[in-house]
Image 1 (cartoon, rainbow, N blue to C red):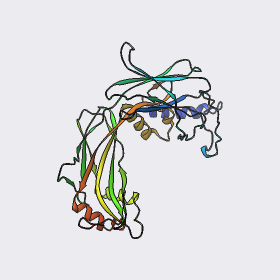
Image 2: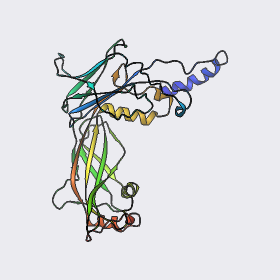
Image 3: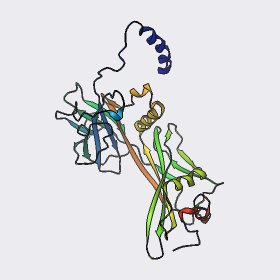
Length: 332
């Protein structure tokens, strides 16, 4: 029986019972640890964030945050261990991080602890996370297999290779998947010069696309770039240049970010159950806590060229001509 169907059955029963006595919906529920740790094989320092959950009654904007933490008063420790059957894997301990800026959100800033560990995780290797909080009856733990970077198949910066995106001609990006269960996000960086004949600078704008969830064995994935959406994104993120300045397209880079199975499940769950009662049961892969222990990787194709047709359209179309781009045969 699904949870949604169960609620449909339960709702009339609640109404019936309420005639006899009041039901306490929001009680004094205990706090739960919240832990996030994302490994990246290209980084040598990795962060672990610990906070706590709490219930907000009424309007969150009027809520006064408690600066005290219920779970981080005593000493605690955390470490990551390379997964091996005989528990002989290398261990990397976390220390308090000197990171000053933290995304506190609705959590007490003093209770939001950030730790860091120095090591280089290897793609395809499984790592176990352990966090010992003395006030809890057991050690919190999670496990993840570090995802491998993808291989971008198209575009490829071969000599003479150019990309055309026009109103009636889109473009398909392709890459090789790196895991059966994963999530991907594509980002395109448009590189251009801006200035005048005396002085100009190299600038970049980033255009990104929604997450792509993948749970099949197909070795090749693709993302179609709709031309109307592509040019609208450029207009949305780029303002007209200053008076007397012009712009000249250099080319573009494509980056593909790959997230592990846990990140895929977490993002799917949040998209599906956000702002609903089901959201109270947040996805977690950490035993004894709420949170995610997973990995992310990135790879790309750089120094790609647009065709003259694309450059000319960007310079002269009704929707983009105010952005001040030169045509393909013009320059500073």
